Length: 331
Ligand SMILES: Nc1nc2c(ncn2[C@@H]2O[C@H](COP(=O)(O)OP(=O)(O)OP(=O)(O)O)[C@@H](O)[C@H]2O)c(=O)[nH]1
Image 1 (cartoon, rainbow, N blue to C red):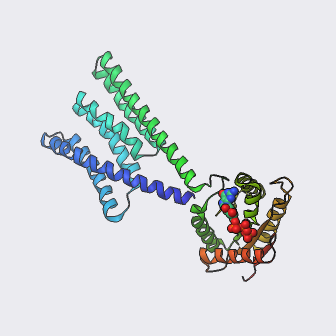
Image 2: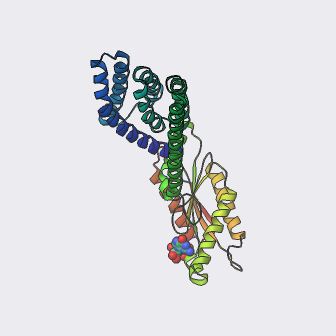
Image 3: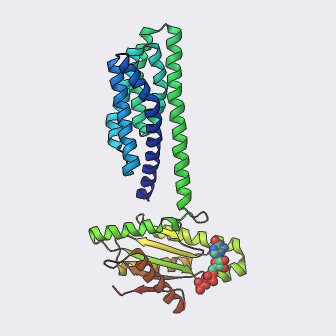
């Protein structure tokens, strides 16, 4: 999951840098040229340098579908911090105006902690400069407004990140049981396959399906059926190890990916799931049972083939009378 989410964050970051770069190139380039024409060499040089770093990143995003995070963090951010000092020294009062967009932009270009550090460094230039060059009434207002802009930006970006994390969690979670839903399944199976290819650690799949669940719904109602699904999920969570990943793949279907687990261990795990579920009072006076299929990953097997073997074993368990485990021993 981590990889999928970080790939999405990377995509968001790329778009942010692209938009940021476009705005900065168009709005800063004329000032860079004007400063050079006015022979304000330092200011012109720093502004041109910053514009060119944005341009390099924008070029990379457009033509190579990537940007340079290290360049942004270790070259662009320090360059902007120095630029804020150069602006104050060269432009004095007018230089203060540039500090506002600079402060906000750090929160979009950098990780939160880096943005705080960058802001503190800008303040280290700004506060002494403003205190020396402006009378107290101006200095207090400038510093206060800069601090406010920084805090508001921090709050705003923090809220967006929290909202984003909540949405991402919602997308991969089954609302009824709290287990993962199907959307993460392929990702997790591919990860298990990659891990197997690297370390040869055995990986096992258990596919499970409640027996005669339709009858439970018909006899006790859908709400009772939902309660059974929740109870079963609780049992699966309680019985599983921290590393195992449990999915509700469909209505009354569940799937567990067991890492570092061979076929024997997988069969034992499936049997203990079934035993525990049969022993759990999901509905008063009624024993709820499950059937399970088990398959251990084979060499050069795809996720689809692996899952198909596990599914076929489950069908065999249903055909064999239900409430039992059938393993695909064709390894
Ligand atoms: N309460 C509840 N029922 C659901 C949910 N999702 C699917 N179902 C029901 O699950 C039942 C599945 O029925 P079938 O596919 O016939 O399977 P079964 O009755 O369990 O029979 P076997 O699998 O052959 O043992 C259907 O009645 C669906 O309506 C859900 O979220 N809540």
